[in-house]
Amino acid sequence: MSTSPLAETLVALVDALSAPPGTGIVVERAALDVPLEGRVDRIGGRLVFSASLPHTRWQSGFLPPVHVAHLEVGDDR
Image (cartoon, rainbow, N blue to C red; front, side, top):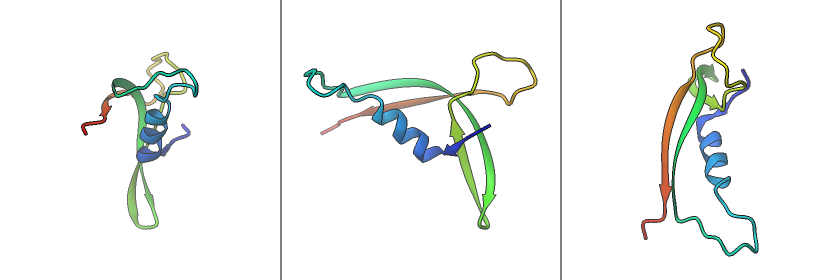
């Protein structure tokens, strides 16, 4: 399972919400329910939680369990 630190995965998800330039669309708020595969590794003496999107949508019983993360982003100014 290839994973990135959870923070990098969340930033990539939020960046993906941007509308293409020139469309005039502005995303002000979004709520996402995202399946994630995660694991905890010891790196340099500290625990690092990593997570990424599942590499398959099929549940075989042999693959790590997939959890759903609920993420809400918005501009509360």
